[in-house]
Image 1 (cartoon, rainbow, N blue to C red):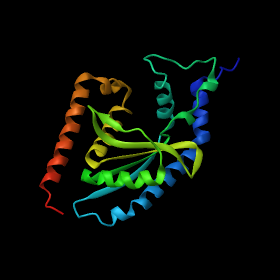
Image 2: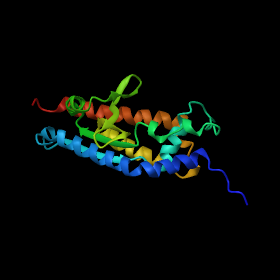
Image 3: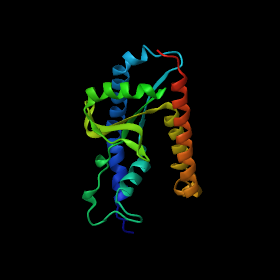
Length: 209
């Protein structure tokens, strides 16, 4: 029996596991470097303030699916006649770090420090014209093949995103349509608005420093 020809998805999965050691090095290096450069802020936090730095490695299926979604139109498929066009190296976030801070008044200070260190390309996350998170991507010293990404976001929004991502973007297959549901999209905006209102009111009520 003839062996089935490998699909582009198969090739991409093979590429992923070839890249995985480098992806892990980038995530670890980026997290360590960011933690080091933010030490001056960490040491002067007030008791009510928080600064958390976490790293993550995008898993294989998420990476393949993101490249697939990058085809740009609903239902688009990989062109099997040109497998050379597709590489996970083109993704900007195989390795990522998220910096979360509370209250959000610390975000600008964090962003200013890290921009001077990394000089990476900005790709901010916005909603309805308002900034939700600073985001940058580029290559770090650990590897020049795999790009890394870091985000700077308020802690309440960042924690909500973690719950949302686990529940809606890696769910039971029966729930795949939930993230695109109109009512869920409205609820998501309401949650983000409420979190921002809480943060703004908290900061308005803080005693003068």
